[in-house]
Image (cartoon, rainbow, N blue to C red; front, side, top):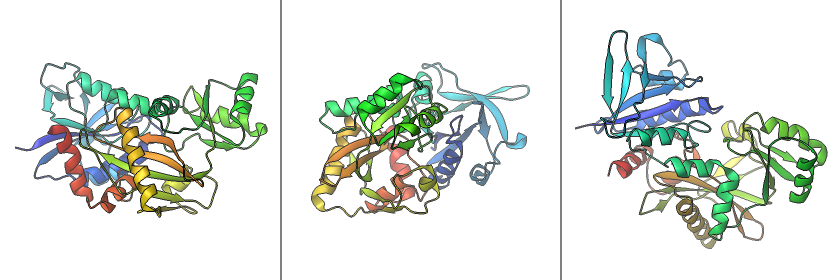
Length: 346
């Protein structure tokens, strides 16, 4: 009997559009002989809609149509039938759900709030749960926990606005530094600041994406990533490396690369590759991750590793870094989706 897999996409985050592309790839690579996708889009206002149309419309962002969507709600009754409730004109329909696959990036989808709701409803979550999602989204908290396990991290402090104290904290961190929204993804609101004169505008822009801002030391080195998969028995993909012509990997370069290139496999020697995979597993475990995540690190010219961040729902198109690292390890996209689902259902 097929399992009903709730695929959640869209959401209130600025990363709404990226979510649609990732969800389309997950849906079209899902094994329809084994799973029945229950497609549920969350619009930019946060309303939930059961979608029964062509998945191509998700990719094109034309999915929100009256003829193929109905409102749905998530009953938060852990001991009842695990389901969605579709709200029709003159009736209610309960749609059983065996597991949920959130394919949503950034706030409201990747930060633990959605995962907490699903856990309250008793629906198994494919990927990280509420606690790990929330911790990994908070860049400074994730760094502090990783540091407790002996992982190097950049110096950083949190500010909540721009004032004289903000300037003093920046001077203590040292220029150049990075200004980042504390809890955001896809490099939204991130600025490299090389002098005090640039600080104010950078902080004010970051505050558009979160009410807390991280001032973080610049780590000079190359950025790499490692895909980690599993709950108890962990496996990793083949690490990649970002080769940059500009100073850093911003939003434009992530989604429309001009001067950057992703090398997968990365051109590290065997010893460094082993260090990267070992560090990625340690970070994944100490932060309480499960299912899957992409761990990003820096490798300095001296060969030291620094933890950057964990993406608990990384990009999931066929061209995204996580699937490419797993493909380099011998796991194709369709097989990867099956493994992720079975890891939770099993």
